[in-house]
Length: 277
Image (cartoon, rainbow, N blue to C red; front, top):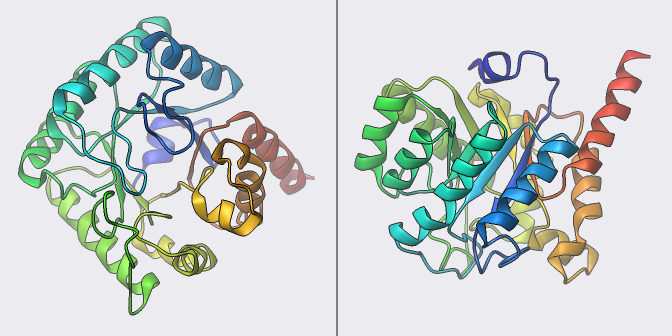
């Protein structure tokens, strides 16, 4: 098991709360709301005040059907936000949500401590490998079948749990070979999966503890929750997000990636009180 929790959050109890900042015009839940630097920074500060442990900043939407953006656009959207946030909150824990090596490098140079790569270091493997060897950041590896543009076009698996497990296991070993030992795994709910695939992965989420790295779960406001509840507006799926996490609370999930922090702070307080009474 990597020492991510003890190394970076020695006084924090699981799960660690990661607040999402989408500096994009087209993210599925809040596209455009935080595209301006001032709006993104203010939202990040609000999430930190509510109890976020990590701020995950991304400049490229990976929603189903989305197109890739240029490196220049991604840099211009994310790096000014990181710089401003670091200057206002020294010591803030920032994750850069990117598949591009140069974006990761600039983020790490300006105060990020984590690279959250939805391609599991496969999009720019050679270039990103060089960055990881040099900086040794915390790395979050996610499973995605295909690419965002087409990943939801009839995704199929013989056994989704086994296939996702095997893929993550291989990518973990690869990143470890680069000298990075602080690794997190994410099964990639909604990334090249049907509703049935998503539910199967959640039902068997504890299987992934055998990867021997902390698990990150990113289900916040996702479409499968809308399919289950009938809620079409993604921004109104926070209750469904919270309920799903609460039902999974006994599972060994180390990091919750979410748009809304305060409900999860309350969930943690109640859970801890019940465990300690």
